[in-house]
Amino acid sequence: MRIEGKGAIDRTKPVSFKFDGKTYQGFKGDTLASALLANGVKLLGRSFKYHRPRGVLTAGSEEPNALVEVVGATNQTPNVRATVQEIFEGLNARSQNRWPSLRFDLMAVNDLAAPFLSAGFYYKTFMWPKALWEGLYEPIIRRAAGLGSLSGKHDEGHYEKAFAFCDVLVIGAGPTGLMAALTAARAGADVILCEEDRLLGGRLIADDATLNGKPAADWVAAVEAELRASPNVRIMPRTTVTGAYDGGQYGALERVGLHKGPRPDLPRECFWRITAAQTVLAAGALERSIAFPMNDRPGIMLASAVQSYLNKFGVVPGRRVTLFANNDGARVVARQLMAAGVSVAAILDSRPEASAVEDCPVYLGAQVTDTKGRHGLRAISGTHMGGEFQIETDLLAVSGGWNPTLHITCHMNGRPRWEASLAAFVPMENAVPNLKAAGACNGAFTTLACLTEGADAARAALISLGRNAVAVDQPKAEGMPYVITPLWQVAGKGRAWLDFANDVTTKDVKLAAQEGYQSVEHMKLRRSSRPRLRRWARGGGQMALRRSAS
Image 1 (cartoon, rainbow, N blue to C red):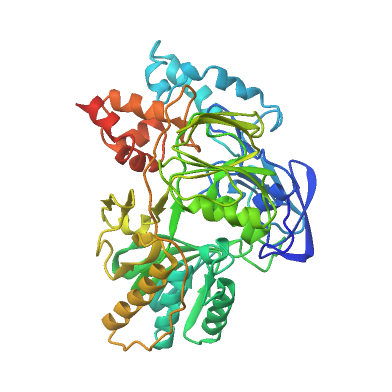
Image 2 (tube, rainbow, N blue to C red):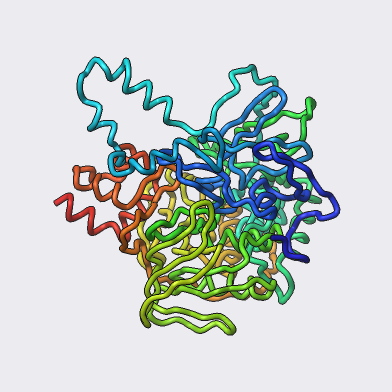
């Protein structure tokens, strides 16, 4: 449902689009995910192997569930994240990996056969007769695998490549990146600021934060205006930096025409090769979920995503919200939801001690042990220090903590280090030559720390360039310290998903460990899982892996 007065969308410009043949209406600035959620659509896809119903989990490029096909006049693009695809007049999208329809998928019979389809089953089951592997088994498995499909037609869209050079490349335009870009720009350095979203500001916008006692959006707008007016600054929204290479070179993919209707004069995408003397990595952090039984139903989302849809798009994907967390961030989300007039059923805090929230029940030592609902969440049940609970709810917002977005620091053989106080990996110093990580991607999870580290990283870059920094007033930021008591897994009878994209459960990882796959990289390939297993193995799953490996 839409919340009046919230969101960075233009409600004076309605946009019509199609999803699975049905016409919906959103507003300019909506993503496909936010527009569908505003229209009450929760079921957006089917899972990779078991074809389980899946809904939106996140609000950004990390989305594993809401993958769709975007159909154009001359092309068909599969596996597009609905959380990234901006709507435009005439957009035609459809769900994938289902037959004959999204709501009634015959391939969901795979879920009934789940006990026989454990991860890696194809390596152990189809062993005999050998001659049938290439002739029968492999073709069937290949046909069943995959998600989206191509049209088979020639893509008449065009794509560009370009080159750019700068003194300072800033990756990410949240509080850290904006402060770094502003500091470097005022010193006269040539600056390129890359941001994968259409909006600058990052979590300042998504969190509805305040700076200097005013909405942080005001500060973001002022900084953006100054940077755009500077002849030595290039701002590149909708641009994802994809890799770090020798000689200060970075690859970046810009979405030029993907958010517009058919425009023959525009390329769909442009791949940039950017050469930078110094780089500030300000890519932020990604919230992680908690592995609890049946945690993959539509209507179960990350708390940060619920907050983003509320503050960026004016959308709440439910009418009765419950929050499950191991840190204080969920309390902020709960207060914002209640201030917007949304009913909050309860806050389930896994910690034995935590502060109360006015007008909202808080269960301490709580864990969700089961969920109900096929095509959408209907209820949850679990335990807490006072006994058991059952709550009717159609939206469960989960927060298991934050992981720094440090991927680029690993592109040149850099290895992250484990920071126990954050229960997360953080980047090593000098992992990439002439690159400085700052802000949330460096483990600084408060707005004040992000602003400070952004300015400091820019000053360090300027010193390396032989330039003198100009004083930049740092805004006053409010916020609470980041305190977390890790909770990686909740025991229970149902399956608990770790990797939603590939249908990998905690049981799959434990089985891989029992089979001798000690390295997470080997386990990832064997189990078709993602690097998030490394974090789970380092945390709650570590002891299980050690026991089975010994």
